[in-house]
Length: 160
Image (cartoon, rainbow, N blue to C red; front, side, top):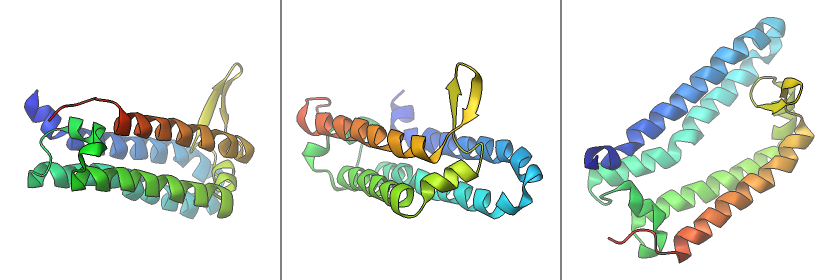
């Protein structure tokens, strides 16, 4: 179990890669219908792989260098471990980049124009998400993440 907790970053990277591959596979039917969208899908999936793995690569560095001993250290940033702080900073930067992309770089419209990237489950089956829905959902996701970070900074979660 200790080995798994020390190298949980492998699982996190694998999950991110598998999610990207699933999304890529699902996009093939949309690309067949509209080949002009292929470049957009390809850029999205590359970005998903690169940006989605940044936090896990930081955990990998902490683990392999011995600066962190367990994944639980990432739940207590107030101990000021530099790799843990870098991890939390990377998450905040990714949130800021998401806000910039969705609201100022037409990312929400991009998602709407590229069906299958994100879908919502409704009473009438699965439907593609609209730009308006993306813009409404993102703040709730970030507020939830911020609430989790505040708890990590203030609650006794893990004692080293």
